[in-house]
Amino acid sequence: MPFVPVPKDLTKVKTKIALGLTKRQLICFSIAAAIGLPTYFFTRGIIGNSAAMLLMIGLMLPAFFIAMYEKDGQPAEKIIRNMLRARWYFPVVRPYRTENLYAYLEKEGKIIAENEATTQSGKAACRRKIPAKKQ
Image 1 (cartoon, rainbow, N blue to C red):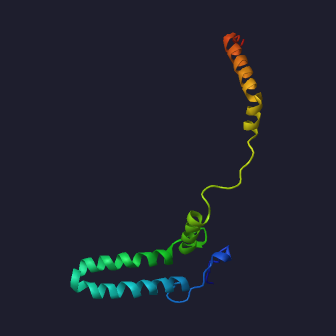
Image 2: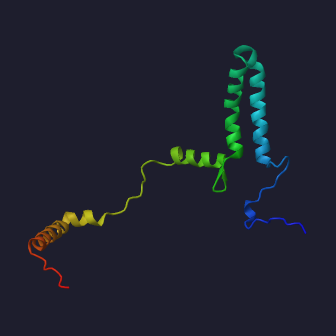
Image 3: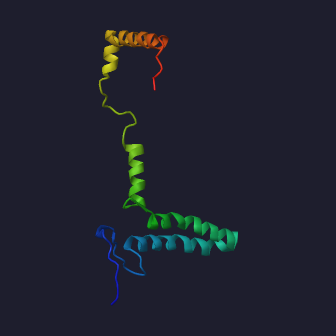
């Protein structure tokens, strides 16, 4: 009897359309081919085969990255969009501020007096000798 592995989390299963690729991957690979192949064929006579191939690879890499990269269930374009939104759409300085209780008490002079009292008691504790334990 044949055995077929079934994943436990079915939300991570993606529908494959052709050649074991998802629709998103097929679209991105098509865009990469549409950008890279004409670039190679038009520039290989001018700059040579090796340089034209490196240029083609450099132009196709972003599309391959967008097609293949996924982190925490989010594709690359969503991650890039979130990073850009965090950088430019949201203000750098947060408008909400909490009231600092310690600053209020410091204005009253209570914390300064407490700090002096604990410092003095700490110095007194260091001056007296602590008896050794008896075994």
